[in-house]
Length: 140
Image 1 (cartoon, rainbow, N blue to C red):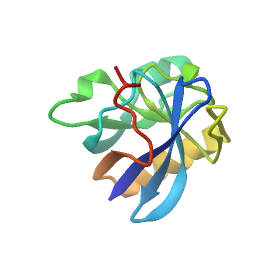
Image 2 (tube, rainbow, N blue to C red; image 1 turned 60 degrees about the vertical axis):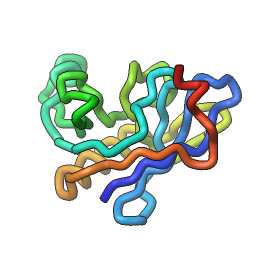
Image 3 (cartoon, rainbow, N blue to C red; image 1 turned 60 degrees about the horizontal axis):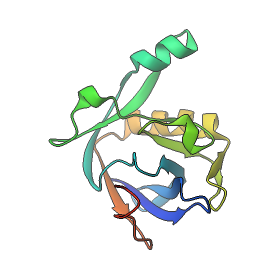
């Protein structure tokens, strides 16, 4: 089972960092844009071709897709690389390291490749939680 636990709001209140786990083992850091965060809950994971990233990168690009009964697959919520909240309009960004107060990720492409590979071989469900921070007022 995959778990994403949101932990830190950046100093500028525009990004939220978190930790991604697989079976209780730490995998990488995450980053989401405040106001566009994926709702807390359980999501099905499906690694599939991302039309927008295939177009952007000029080659067929497989990325994890997240969906459930309330958030349809057609919304295209993906897990992908990015260094700041500006690199996402509502997806989960991943990185090998993080500067949480600055709201940035480091080695994001490496993390994307690793997470995509792991999720392709260990797909199933991702549970998203708000950790030691209170986010409801930020997500409105």
